[in-house]
Amino acid sequence: MIFHPAILALFVGSILVSLMILYASIYAVQILRKWDLRSGSELQLILERKTYLISTLLAYVFGFELLSFFLFIFTADQIHSFFIGAMCAAGSLFVNPYGYPTLILKLFNFILAGIWLILNYVDNKAEDYPLIEKKYLFFLFFVPLILTETALQANYFLRLKPAIITSCCGTLFSSQNGILPLAKAFSPRSPTMVAFYITLSLTVGIGMILFLKGKTGYLFSGLSALFFILSIVSIFSFISFYIYELPTHRCPFCMLQSEYGFIGYPLYLTLLGGTISGFGVGVLMPFKKIASLSRIIPAVQRRLALISLILFLVFTGIVTTRILLSGLISEGF
Image 1 (cartoon, rainbow, N blue to C red):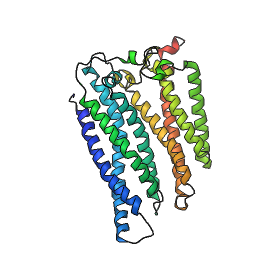
Image 2: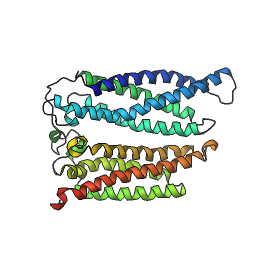
Image 3: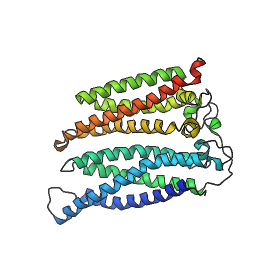
Image 4: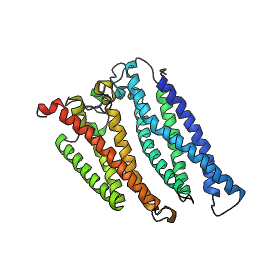
């Protein structure tokens, strides 16, 4: 294992998160089995107090989960110098079989954590906690994912050994030898760029309808998901070219380094933030008919849509600015 402050923070943090998750799951099961807001029993009063505690605890846990995704990427990038051949996080994550599975699961859990926080926020707005069963069922589904993430991350860090020979990002993300299926058949640059901006325009248009009229929630959520997927494809297809000013460099990690102004962090933060907000609109749609949420959810959806649109536009603004200022434009690329 390599000793690094960020590794230690992630390692200890993930263990604490797992312990808190297990502790919370015990009371979540009790709440699901015994919750009855109509009852004035002592047990119900205890459960109501417990749900305040558990909700607050989980808010901090999932907040750390959001932070840990970026801390993990930062750590993987910081330790690349320990490995022969690694130039960025791409090589560090390829050192053993646990690196990329950990990253993928962290990304999945990042999105789920954001959605749970939205559900919890809406539920706490209503006096009768109408989503308490649904949010705790969602949480219990989340428990094995968090524990699996902790196990994968621990295996990744514990099996790190200095001076291991690994591959550089140029090899890992080349069109001939890429580790991702996407890397073997990158979408053509020009069609992908057109699709990227068209999808953004549709997302903004539908988002404005949702913000002004409170309609098209499912459609906006679907377009947010599509824009997220297309943005990831676009990073490989053309965005990376203009950031690195090199048509053969497709790495999604090098842009996190100081050489490129750490531009990857605002890019990924705005893209993921916009995606979670967009997903949240669709997740809340089935609960609009609940009486105590009939006024709360439309207002929250409008705010989520606005946040999503702002973040997507900031993401696109950063991308567009880099394209226009890139030296590749002057060369007619």
